[in-house]
Image 1 (cartoon, one colour):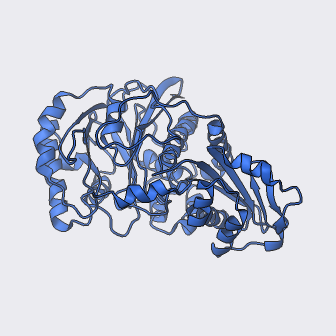
Image 2 (spheres, helix red, strand yellow):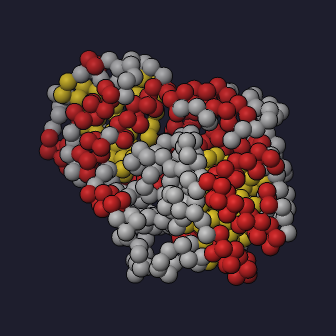
Image 3 (cartoon, helix red, strand yellow):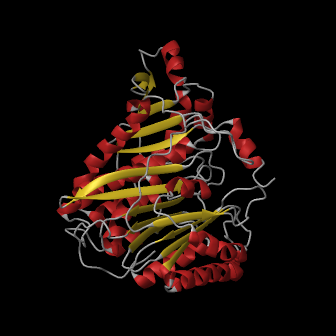
Length: 485
């Protein structure tokens, strides 16, 4: 989305510059965003990469499995890479409630409503898909209109994407927001919406409007786990993350949920994410932060390379913590908050990969020695999205030749005779050919792990990039082949 120029933020260029960059291809966007946020981005870049590596390494030990429970009707087996839903205490100023609107044939909650106090701020990042959905259009237009000020409610439904539905789809969104605004005594434009489900199906807004009175009565500050479950589609476990930070000596809370399992690719994916903090932060500062940190979190994961029409990441600030209001993203008092916000976004993004449809491997791919950061990113993405590479991981086969193939077809500068490939600490190839220390038995043993790391040096520069992906299994085909049946 676009914004009018705002006051510079501690060396940052206006938020509009970063948002303009968001409309560009991912290879170009990387360099543009870094320039747009320089020097803040350059100062944080090395620390961000270290944090990302630290967070990825925390998965080297098997994650505790969620408490066993009888699967609900229509539910799929829980991913072997699943992590437990965290303990998420209430966040001052936000209340949540869920209900069943009836978008699914079987009995499950598929409607989420969040309410926010007067004066709350909101910022968002959305899909750059060429066929955006009606809810995405609504949020982008009204965030631009209100400059992110005064948001009062969020309505989310699962089971119907309301995408590629033309004017009738837009009218359905408007009616949902009108009904919600009446219940929360606010303007239509103060209501955000999001939908997920089958593309090309018109939203039956009456199902939502009919349930609003009942759902409103159940609003509670302690409903995060239920909220995460209500927005699931092919997800096999609810996804949440929580952190606390200090702003000028005052403790603030940051909590978020997301959904996504398939149709996950850089530049957002079939992904909805809603993050709330009780800090008091201006909309412009929120927008700068969410635009900056999306790049190395949600835009650095891929399951299948397919981008969705409905991707939405909304960040809300209720201002109810008692901390002083911050109007600049570069304010020194936000240092701890920035770190914790990035952690929450990274944690949620990793959970998307862990729940990749049919996934059995969580894979970190790092490309080093590239000519530019954008080039490294493109090469890493090509590796992560190669069906041949992903099926090799599924078969626990360290077929490094497929990785070399993917590197070459990225059409980026590489030095074949200097290239190296490493699985964990094991060298597969060095200086353009198989490593002298290659050991098939050790490599095969490593490939049996659930958490894998691949590092590729392409030998032409000093730039690097990291992305996360999963393997491609027969189960992925089964899930998507049966999706509508």
